[in-house]
Image (cartoon, rainbow, N blue to C red):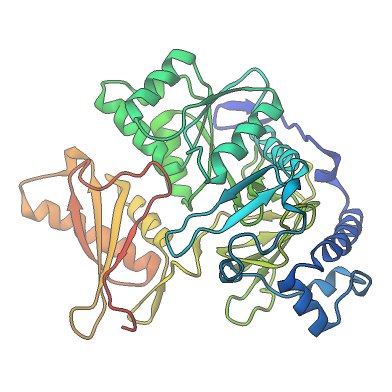
Length: 443
């Protein structure tokens, strides 16, 4: 049993594969790697690459041969739209989900009945590691459409044996009422929506710490450790991080145990590489790089070396909880949402970290980039607590200066800071959109 803050969490390891010795785990991975190479060999994209490189299942003699396999990107999925990566006949499909189409056509992902059971099992693993028990009631405030988060967590919760409240997203006042009426102990949503729930509760005259919630499992968007601390303080809960992406399976690739020292990767089902996004060579252990994932056991649409664009670190040291799988850090940014401002690489997560270092700021912010002449200009709009808003210009300027100094320290860039009153910036029930880039293409 572990103690996180004031709450004890039983250290339950669901499956023996989570604590396999490294040599046994790698032997299992190699067997499954050969199997998946055989399964995808008739997919046109992989068949062509295999022929060029002389790849067969037998040519996978060690895990080092993984690097001979081709990368797969979201653009590849779009070029073979809608289901050009299927490895099973259409009549074997049990469900189809899709990822966001904000940067182009949505990419569809398919599941067999066995895939759905696997998905449920993987979600159950990290939920159990984060304290979920059969006696709990879980409030799911994720969307239940093509997005994988709602359904993935829903069936993982049922797999554990807990009760699900499929509240879906939106209508925050109603969500709070349901949580109170049903006494839900666990919350599932994006971290930014948890802040909205807490904020709305206070507007209704309800102390968010008085809600029956005890635990939360957040995903769907990057978030910082500072945001976790604020949510936990606002709601008196323990917040756990998990990671997944629809192209690979959805939530269930990794999740935190009670120690919350990195997310345990389900390495018996996924091989995760951490590569330099420019050279595509492995980064030194413990350094940041792009996560590249090979799905070993998915039936309908397994992807090889999928470039996630997510930036994180890997830690292969065994965890004190008893799990022997590698752990990944929280995602600190994406290679495709990185802003280059006056030659400096800036991630939205760095801005968030800087803001939350300043007492009185909130995690509600917007980043705007424009180039009115020859130089980029970065503007950060951030809401502050009502008691910090003042008619005295000197006080407001000191607050802006403190925020600007932290942004410079954390992100290495100077920004113009605009202070906003509470509830004046947009709220999001799904993934938060924090950046408005007004520069013209090619600037």
